[in-house]
Length: 262
Image (spheres, rainbow, N blue to C red):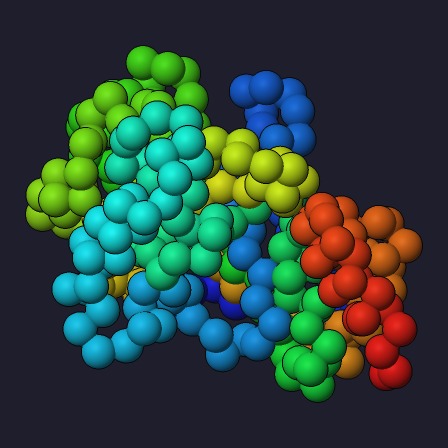
């Protein structure tokens, strides 16, 4: 099986591709059920930062998290749950099995075009239907969603049914992707309209999993020749590092990119 791949050739075609299937007949509203992840290089995979460590990375997961919890100040988490710790660890750069996503197509476009060293390389935006994904969840998680009337889990909901990565690994014999919303640790998470995915095993990448379920996701290819137009229009729409990364680091990143020669 192959994943649906769409190559766009204009700003308008990109908008059509990103907002496709957003009409919700039951609600009578345009409410997309897709998670978006923008990458500057179409060859990049949906691999976690844990996977990128290489070697026996899956054996390091518990050691990384145990030591993060040991040395991090206890006040950095709202509650002492595995899901709060994972969210904070991911946010501050610890290698984890989490992947960052956004509800916003525009923010995904930003991440696909922000790296000016990759403007000569085709970019990609992955779109994954998290509602269809969650139809494959084991009963304990699917029932939790249904009882809450929700489409995406929260760290609080997950904490009520799964208390460790060992429990997550054992929750089902099938490989499953789970989307959940992290706590709003700071304005960065809020402004990026961010949420996360996690696999029930650390050794399977999401793109590999999607090959078994191609009806759930698709790839939208952004040709290199289109990147500058998208980048300039996003800047005009105020979708920039200054907004998505509040603080002096985001301001500096925005100014560096903005004033770099083409």
